[in-house]
Image: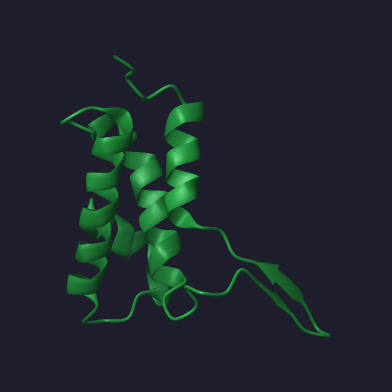
Length: 96
């Protein structure tokens, strides 16, 4: 999954950041396991990949929620919240 994320990031991926990206991926994989109550989250691959890419691209702006300037306005997404919402909406959460 790591190589697929690197390929999807394209030029946005900085060479040498494999360890950082792998750490982010591990964090989201663990969180997906906790959210879904599953030990195998292969069916959650797309949600994990999207959250990992978002977190990687937002590094350095973790405390920013929005950015307003005369030229443009941007809102930042919390990748952990988005992962949680996507997993629940897509019916991948097991409730006991």
